[in-house]
Image: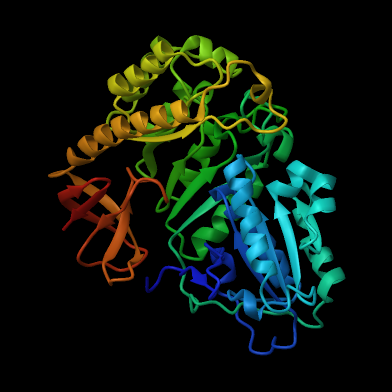
Length: 461
């Protein structure tokens, strides 16, 4: 891509700095070559990308040079994911691969393991992962500069960024509105990793959004472990609906999108805000996880097939034309064939625009990991494939119905082959495909007539 911040790789294949916070791209220093160099590797979800961007900002402001090539770095911060075992293994593989590079293998250059993995495994990790020079759990990421000072020294003067982006600003960004979770779903380790739920103050969020908008960002996706609970821990209580309306009214030329909202957080007030403002994407990402009332109860969640379908119908009635994404799980302990069929029935009848699906993973420390009647891995794989096949068929058909419609599209950049692409309001970052177009300036919103659709992608003029 030309104007999109490209992902660089070393010869060993490590992907670096998947997104660079747009606040930092404007700052360049001509005289920072003597400062220690720091690189970032970010794994996992968008929330981790936001955390990496915040750490990067602190590191840059302290005077360190930010580089994209790990082989040029004195220290590499690996922001890990540990939501499921597969993510933990990916994080470990990245660390092991990095530790084999010159300088890191001798310990002269430092590896800092940050984020979810040290938060989840703590002292156990420190005793076993000797390749790392320091561990920084999620709750201690504000201390990243102190950690680097101890490992590689502190710069004597303010530093800057060395970036393959050449100062370009990617026109879309994430903003975290809260952290933590205390719902304790039986399968989920997030409460043990991130701690209890806590909302960020409205003014803090507004300030972050203002900086992003000033830097040229045109779409901001609001994220958290549970966006629908924002403000309920304040005195007096506040709501996600109020937060969203406040931002939409102040930043009228900026798109706002909500991701990761639990069904109980979908209120009439919130739906009315989504329907009211033209710059709020008519889009909801709402993980239902299952359709069986018994399975959901064992997951420590609420809902049923009937309740879920009624909620979907209510949302579509209150916000006509809304795009709906959900996430579902197969193979939860004790899931019968009949209960699995309930899940398929929900997907067929609800006709979600997009579906994320995954198989149950028995995560250490969670209640579900010790439950009886664990499902055979082969059965889980078969059920997962059946869900994915069904979800794809429904999604492809729903995307095809947009042919002939007019869509507002934010121009994002160029693919490696020079193809210009963007994102419509009905497409969330990284998960829903993109829209291809023939012309437009990066960062502008254009109206397109959709002329073709192929699987999840659209094409317009």
